[in-house]
Length: 184
Image 1 (spheres, rainbow, N blue to C red):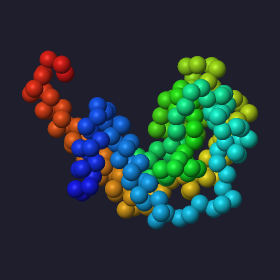
Image 2 (image 1 turned 60 degrees about the vertical axis):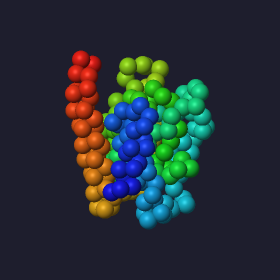
Image 3 (image 1 turned 180 degrees about the vertical axis):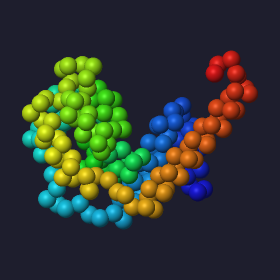
């Protein structure tokens, strides 16, 4: 508990949003527990290899990624998605910013629906091409067991982090109300 509080304080020294804080803590938690989770079979193929696309191509819109791109957690860490610091885990995939923002924290049924609907609906050039939708769904369903963990102890810690960060930001908001109510 003391370690989590230290991390909360350390992370909040930079200007952040509650979701940034939660995301950092969940990544830390999942990375720390990765060594205790079942090993992923060596025969498991990551999404980009399965689709047969180059590394610098977004696996959702199948367009070249401009700039550095972003790393998408196919199953978000805050929902038990697996994570590694070296970013080599099959749950992590390099995507373009627009597709990652559109996908957000969708996983499970919501992710499948998002894929079926073509992903980024606001920009027709960023839609998931029809010929890739079924492939993405099949890959996801075949690999879901390796993308996430439902281990009760880890799920309990994830809930604990959500509760702690909510309490932390509620206290900060109340404090801000007393100091400068005109800005809220």
